[in-house]
Length: 83
Image (tube, rainbow, N blue to C red; front, side, top):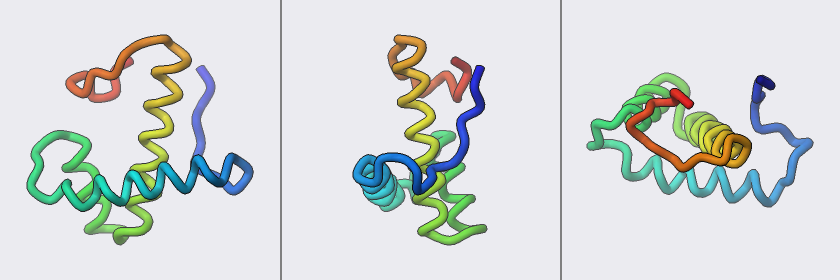
């Protein structure tokens, strides 16, 4: 299985922009939520700051989207990354 890296400048800039903006809008809503992704994003924001947390969340969304497309499966948030 290929290891997915970070969001780089070599990829599609528009798609990266959309992923980061979407992650930023999700970060607005994560403060009171108790799901694993929201708790992870909040702890990352506390350690690294809002912008780095948004990029990391966008990378996580890109990894999830890739896995869904590559394995032809639907997203189940209760799986916690167990594909």
